Amino acid sequence: MKIYTYQGRKNICGERIREMRVKNRLSQSDLAAKVQTEGITLERDSISRIENGSRFIADYELMVFAKVLNVDIQRLMN
Image 1: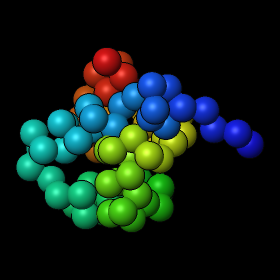
Image 2 (image 1 turned 120 degrees about the vertical axis):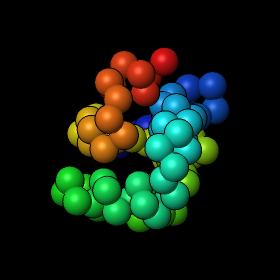
Image 3 (image 1 turned 135 degrees about the horizontal axis):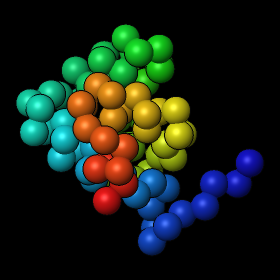
Image 4 (image 1 turned 60 degrees about the vertical axis):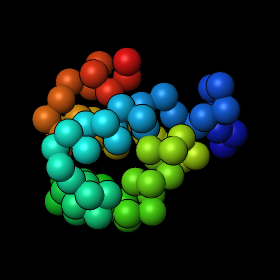
């Protein structure tokens, strides 16, 4: 499967995920742990790569991020 980039990034919501994580006073490790409690296996380094745009985010992962960060998916996409 070929994963395309948009303006040099593999996702458009990593920056917003970082903003929401910081707003909720969570470390990358804390966020990874919360995501794992929802059944998605992500490590701290995966969170880091998502936030800097070097990792693709699947739609089901985006749903879990929205849930654990307590925001609407649209908020992560803008």
